[in-house]
Length: 431
Figure: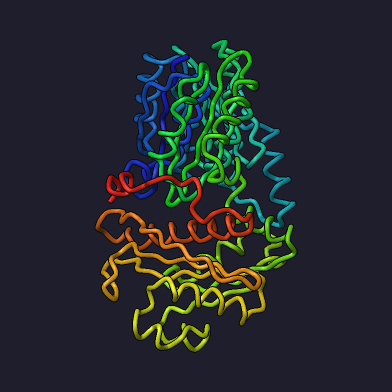
C-alpha cells in the first residue's frame, strides 16, 4: 500500500503555520505498515490541488489530503475533488441537519457560509467525524482513492484512527498492529537508545524515540499476527532495562503522576520559582482537581524576595548569589513552611542568554524539601540548545520537567538520579 500526503493551505505553504498534520500522518501511517512515499504542500488554488492529486495518484494507491474542508471561500479541497471527478457539488441533507442541530445546541445563529460544509462531490463517501462538524470525504478518481480530511488536528487524527487506517489495512491486507508509548524523564535520548539495543533487535518490533525538552517518549510498535503478545514482551523488557526513569505511559503526563503520588500520601506541594517564572505552578494547575494537592507558589525572581518572602539567609545570597545549591534548598524549605505544604519544590538557575554571577547558561539547581527532612538538591547542567532566543524557552521547559521528576522520585523514595546514566557525551553532542 503506497500512500502520498497532500496538505492544503496558504498558511502552510508560506510558513505561517507549522505543518504538524503531515508529521503526525507520516509517523502514524508508517507505524501501521503503510508506505508513505511523498508529502507535498500546496496553496489554496483549485487547479493546483487538482494537479497535485492527479500526479500523486499516478504514483500511489491512495492520497490523503488535509485542509480545505471548512466553511470559508478559500476552503477549496471539496471543489477541487468534484472538478477532478467531473461531478457537481451536492447538498447532503444529513450534514445540513447536523449543522443546524449543533448550532441550535450551542445557541448560535448559523451563517449561510457554514452550509458549505454540507456540500460534497456527488457520489463521495462520507467519513464519520466524531470529533467535529465537517466529515472527511472518500472520493474515487482514476488511479485510486482520495481521502480528504479536515485540517483541524484532533479531528483529522480521529478520522484517521477510526476510519482511514482500518480501511487501508483491509485493502492492503496489512498485519495486525499494536502500539504503546512509554514516557521517560531526566535521561538523554542516546542513553535510552543504547540501553534498548536488544529490544530494537526483536522480530516484529519497532521503536521510535520522540525527544522533547527534558523527556524522551518511546513508541513501541508491533506488527505481526501476534502483535499484542510481542508488544507486551517488548514493553516489559523496556521497563526492565530503563528502570525508574520510565514514569508513565500514553497520556500519563508527569504532572498527573505527581498529583497521583501526592494524593496517595494525602500530601500537598508548594513551589518557589526563579528562572521558570511560574511555569511549574502552571504545569501543576493544568489538571482538573489539582487544588487537592497543589497548595500554591511564589515567583521570587528578584534576589531580595528570596530572602524576604522565603527566608533564604541574606549572607548566603551575598556570598554565593541566587544560583547556588544551598539557595535552592533554602527556597524549598521556605516555601514549604510559609505555605503550610507537605513538600516544597524550588528552582533557581541561569536561563540565558547571558551568564549570571559567574554561572554559565544552563546552570540549574532544584530543591525538594519533604516533611521534616533535609532538602534534596540536584544541579543538572542542562545542555544549551543553540545560540538564539530559543535558549530561554527550552531551558525553562527542561527545568520544569527536571523539577517535577525530582519531586516524583522523592515521593517514591528513589535516588535523585538513579538510572539516568552518564549523559556527558550526549550533553556535549547537544551543546
